[in-house]
Length: 169
Image (cartoon, rainbow, N blue to C red; front, side, top):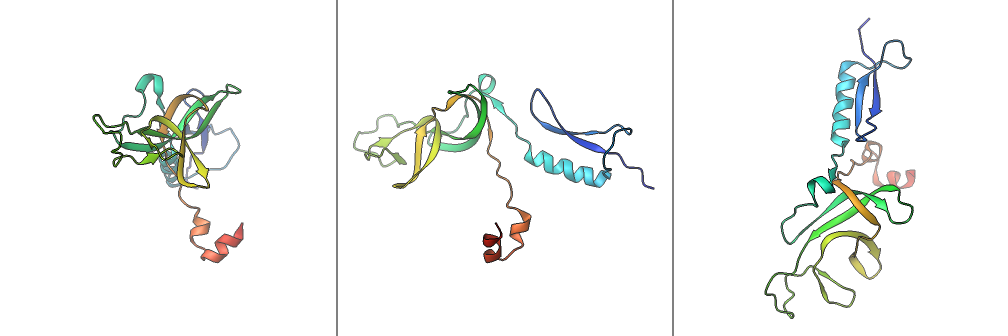
């Protein structure tokens, strides 16, 4: 018989990070080979979220004219609970010395057609009249932000023909 160690998935109560630790031999559960453990750890590492705490590291530092989507952890205005959502950080301040009529560098406009030069956190919304629609963040106080890592598409759906995958759900 091959000697294998059992591992369990745990969560650090302070940081919320997931980690794997050996299970004492007397506890019940399945066994995992080292190769399976290594593959599992690699998948967990790929999913790990590294939070930037705003009071320690500040807001995102993007070049002027850039924007980027992030995960944000915030304290809700209403019930004061910690929540996680997506938000966009904009650093698109109005260039100095720009004539009021010269808005060629502007990428965003208000519903009235006026140039909009956003700096700070915004939330993306669906709107029937616009392809992109952002409002200044007002859901609560943002405490931390992290890179927006999107998961892979489900392997089960990648192997199915398009019509079958669409009808499967």
